[in-house]
Image 1 (cartoon, rainbow over the protein chains, first blue to last red):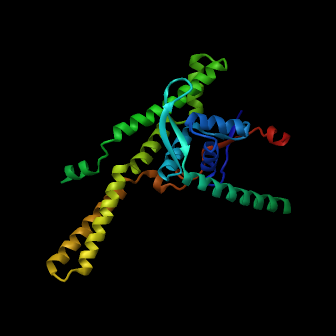
Image 2: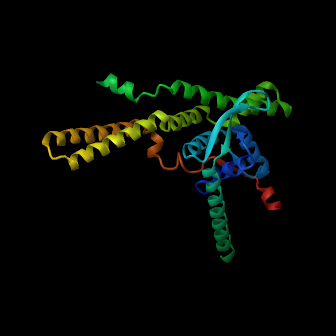
Image 3: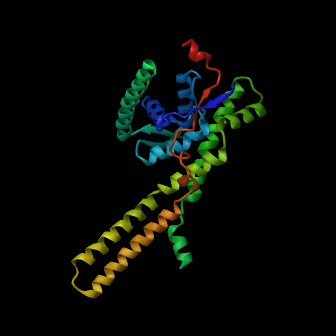
Length: 110
Length: 152
C-alpha cells in the first residue's frame, strides 16, 4: 500500500512515545510496534526516525535508558519515563486535546 | 596548538557511542526480520523488507551519533567549566582595582568566549541550518488508502 507523508504537529512523535512508555519500560522496536498496533495501521512511525527522537528526549530528561534483556535473550536498551517525562506527557496530552478540539470546531463551522 | 585543541575537544567515547547506537539499530532490524520470517517470508525477503521499513540506516545512525555526542557528559562538563571561567573573569574585572588583575579577568573572559564558540562551531551540522530536518515530525506516515478512516 502506498504511504503518504503527513505533516503532523511538531512534537506529535514525542507525545506518542511518551504515551507508549507510560505503560512501562520498552525497547525501541517495542515502542514502534505498540504505536502501530494502537493506531491499527492508520498511522505509521518510520522506524529509523524513532531513534533520533528517543535520543533527543533522553537528552531533555523526559526518558532514561538502561540495558536489559529482550524477549529473545538479547541485550537491548530499554527506555522508561522519568518524572519530568510524566509531567511533559500530561502537558502535551492536554495541549493535544485543546488543539484537536479547536481544529474540529473550525472544520465543523465552515 | 591545533593538536592540543583537537585533543581537548575530541570525544574519547565516540567509538563507544557509535558501537552502542549501531548495536541498538541492528537489534531493531533483527527484530523486524524475525517478525517477517514468522509471517512466512523467506530470510532474504525478510531482510530486504526490514531494511525497507527501517529507512535510511546511515541517516538514523548519523543523527543519533550527533545527538549523543552533543549531549555527552564530558561536553556538558566542558560547557559548565567555560561558563564558570567566564563568571570568574567577569567578577575579577568588576571587583579588582589593580590593572594586572583586570588583564587576568579579560584573559579568562576571552578564553571562556573562545572555548564556547569553538564548542558551538564543532557541534554544528547541516541539519542546524535546514528547518524541519531535526525537530519537526517527518517520521509519521499515513496509508494513502484511507478506507479504514472512512469505515471508522
